[in-house]
Length: 161
Image (cartoon, rainbow, N blue to C red; front, side, top):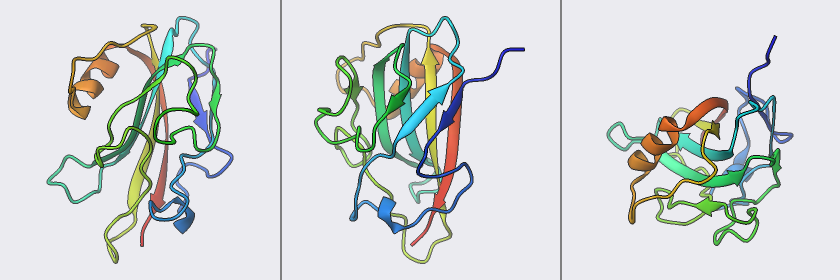
């Protein structure tokens, strides 16, 4: 029996309420992520972090998106999402998050609102490189990533101020 692609972090578990260290005006570092049970035909990976509960009229908030992660990669260290991409493997590419930053943007839900969901999604892709049109929006990138997805795994965590 084939096991499904699995995404984990030593920093939190799926469904966990996390502390303020993940807030954007605190550490603001992407967490350590690891994955297993990768499909044999995977040619690259993408990772996205989305807050579907952000008060944006339904679009949510994109905290991080990275593409062109090599197929033999099985983890990213803490702060791999540092702006500028120096912590990423060669060839990987940050895309602008909803703050307009090329890197990871930590959590900052409205004070007093119920805890927001933060969904970390790993995509196993059937292509070794995604070329994007200039000024591609996160919606367009999401469409392109999904058109190449052969498997995906996610972790949902919660945070509120």
